[in-house]
Amino acid sequence: AQSVAQPEDQVNVAEGNPLTVKCTYSVSGNPYLFWYVQYPNRGLQFLLKYITGDNLVKGSYGFEAEFNKSQTSFHLKKPSALVSDSALYFCAVRDSAGANNLFFGTGTRLTVIP
Amino acid sequence: DGGITQSPKYLFRKEGQNVTLSCEQNLNHDAMYWYRQDPGQGLRLIYYSQIVNDFQKGDIAEGYSVSREKKESFPLTVTSAQKNPTAFYLCASKTVYGYTFGSGTRLTVV
Image (cartoon, rainbow over all chains, first blue to last red; front, top):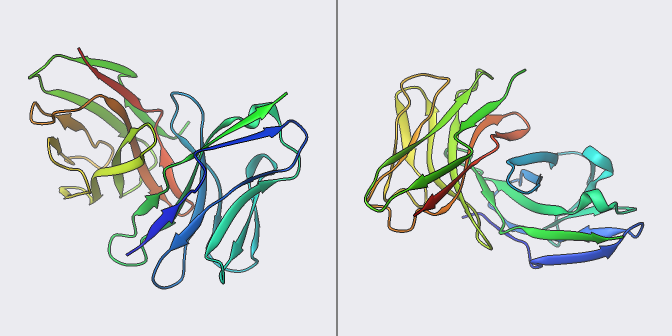
């Protein structure tokens, strides 16, 4: 069975500082991993994905994520946070069998403080 | 401009009433999904459909029903059997990049 954990409900960071939003996963087989962002009363927007290849994945809006197989982690990072990055972030893993549905973590609310 | 359209944006339901949430896509995607979002619980899968005229229950299907008569449309009915329907509902379709989401419908019981 697959699962995703986002251990932090809330992350606060000062504008201009680097940010990290944590995600760990459990999946049988090769993991397909995703990050999405949600702004208030909106749907989720795709940020980036890891399927195979380089462990460092670059995505939209300057975000990147590092796949670490030994630690089963896929942390989202950005070198310099913007106030506009404040939102709810979801990590997801794709079901490796059957319908290939996505399983989402519970989300991490990022607040960037001016 | 391709995408997923959910309507209405806000919906109010009286106790014992059935309501239907609309989801339309013009992306020509086969697979479509309905999720429910509650604070602190992330997204939970209600129903999904891999192809027209076929759909499967997700993790929390009780009190909900769907249909998939057309590729473009995947409406969700929240029945009176759903005891706690107040939530944000998201429709999605599957792409090679994962999922594309609609803007959601916020349902409130009054």
